Image 1 (cartoon, rainbow, N blue to C red):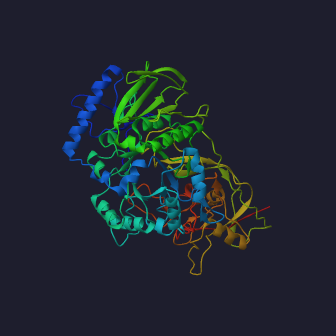
Image 2: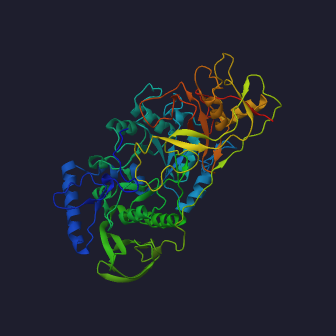
Image 3: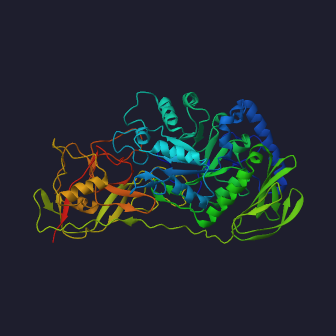
Amino acid sequence: MPHEAPRDPWSPRPVDRATVVAEGAELDGAKILGAPADPADWPRWREQLAAWRTDARARIGHTGALYERAEFAWTQRCFSVALVWLWDEQLYDFEQRRFTPERLLAEAAEFGGFDGVVLWHAYPVIGIDDRNQFDWYRDVPGIRELVAELREHDVRVFVDYNPWDVGTRREPVDDARAVADVVAWLAADGVFLDTMKEAPQELRAALDEVRPGVAFEGESTLPLARVEDHHLSWAQWFDDSDVPGVIRSRWFEQRHMLHHTRRWNRDHSDELHSSFLNGVGMLIWDVVFGVWVGWNARDRGLLRTLVEVQRRNARLLTHGEWTPLAARSEHLDVVGSRWRDGDRELWALVNRRAEPFAGPVDLDGRQLELGLPGRAVLAIEPNGDVTVSPRGLSPEFPERETVRIEPPIVRVAEVPPGMVEGPPPAASIAVFRRRETGTYGEAPYVEEWKPLPPRLHDLVDVERPAPRGRYAIGVREVVGPEGSPLTGLTLDEAREHARSAGGRLPTEDEWQAAAVAGLLGRAEPLVWNWTESEHRDGRTRFAILKGGSHVEVTGSDWYADGGALPPEHSLKLLLAGGGLQRSPAIGFRLAVDLP
């Protein structure tokens, strides 16, 4: 992954900014087609937008034929999509060892319910061993039943495709066929194209062979020519103009669905406003690769209103005559869009200010007295009903505590055979590769626009406390009958093995202190070591691995760390359920407490 030049990480990159609509401007690659600040320029702006769309459709040969096919009609109503790690504790119960879609869907009511779910599976744990992205679906007990139950509740299911997975074990077929096989096996509805703006043509053909109506959702700016066969895309890090503009792909093909997303933001009201004014959806992503980035109450309330209005008026939003910026207040505190089909008319208005608004709003020449709370949205629906987002909800970030599971105390009178006393307790520095997982529960980025190297994947130091007291630790890992490290155990299974042997697992800080002091040996082949370091926040569980591994998967920076690594190096591993923690590249050693 190339490194970018230094920039302000809290400001949009040039590629994210809205494109100015002017004579001769290149608009085909825009994210958002920016609006003029002066309302007097809006009629001309709308004419330019219409002219560009007509010309672009002719140049590209866009027909929209796939949008007419009944099997793809669901994409035009898929306003709310959640990206959910398979082992999120809203979706999986570690104690009962089963998926809990009923709990996920109950919690989804806070967001107005989900129309779709991306079942995230491999990253950021892939690369810990040779398992490939398809294994991380196929090896999951109960996943087919999970997909079936979600679909029974009218929730469409997307699988994730990682084109960068080139270093793990290879399938006997190419990626297009492997993706299609997983889609067919799961009866999935869509494929999310991780890191990809568009899918290879052979993937479209492979999916059409196995299941009708499987849609693509690309990440970021979809090339205009592929709007024809990509029914959905992410509006990822789309920066709007000061006066809200129109999303290029939606204006080009009104039936194309987008989902706004800025994964590290704690205020989603800009995205929600743009979604409402463009008639498109939102991605709900409140846990980003194990990091809590929850939505505030105000934004959840805004989204509930959006999807309620959008679902009732889905046909009008995709087939009605859309007039952007058809409504405005005098000082542009409030602006809005209109969709019309015969005598049916929908207005979507937003209050762009943090303060409440009360006053006249011009609806294409008709004055209406309206009141909107700060940052609120308001709809005037075809039957005349007025729907306003809730008042008085907090915009504060909903903090969530990450709790460390306290290690057991296993006190012995003296150092057991095969163990060595650790050095005197002292604070230390652990080193992590800065990944999107963070380190110990904190968000690695807050309000940042698309972190890239060197802000992403560099090394970061983390201060660690001294171990809690005197301890002894195994000189070598626990080994199997052949003398190689005993692997293939989950964290809980390793704990139970240690308990039955009269010990416990060492903490990551004990392990590091002993290794830095030169007290630890390593069996062959080199494997990561489990440590007693589990953390939970009610949504994600993780533990810290130490020691490196003989497995080093190459070909992408997105893989988990591998290879021989210094004692200071730590890897945060998200804990999967269903036995998927078991790995031939993770072993363990024993520790005990001393008087």
